[in-house]
Image (cartoon, rainbow, N blue to C red; front, side, top):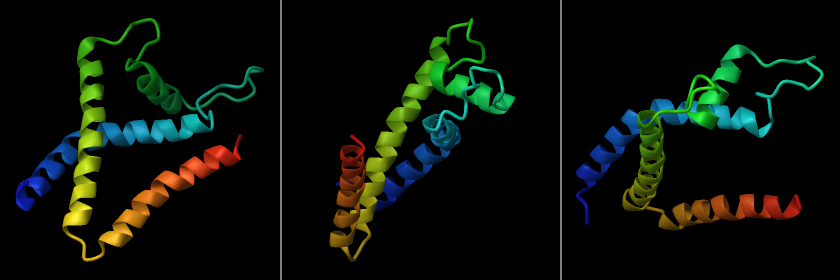
Length: 124
């Protein structure tokens, strides 16, 4: 078993390194859910430039559609994805390790699985 201090330190440094890019991707993913980044076909509504640019970074990891992303940014984004998975798993482990109510943690995790699943089923 990993020492709790080491567990927290790994979580801290991975989180600090990748937090900026994860926040950008989370924000741009949130507005893409509602298609706020798409211009209306009739041209009546065009999203602000910052939303268009950040959405482009999110989708293609580039600042220009005509230039493909280079390996460096793709590798960093992939590492950020792995870090998000790792820090999430570390957070779950820490939640169990440092709680006096593991049943509450388990119920929250189950709700985090069941609520979206039910919403998907209801939306069919």
